[in-house]
Length: 118
Image: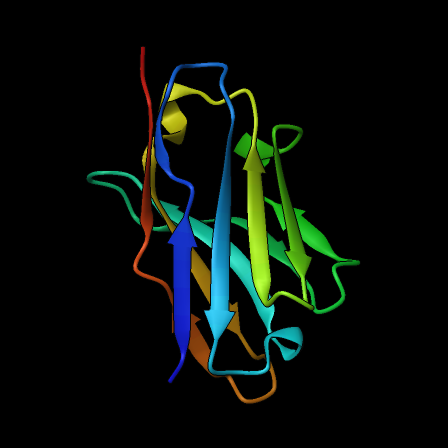
């Protein structure tokens, strides 16, 4: 059974930091491109960051470049999102995604709420 379980969300003040984790099981983690998406109220879900199989390739949406860092540990089947210098506009539900480009298999977690507010 495929599972993606996010954790680490919460309430943080502007300028603060959070580290999100996504624990994966039920598939060959190292063969999947891993991504973090977010969806704010009333807005469409957007790609925040993506990391390739061996962590050598990363991509970020412009609004988080220099503040967020995506990483993965294939031995632990976990992907992380380190979020620094958080802003109120980062408030959203953050979702973990696993995608296999060859087979097009695609999995989603349930999401974790991040709220940036004073």
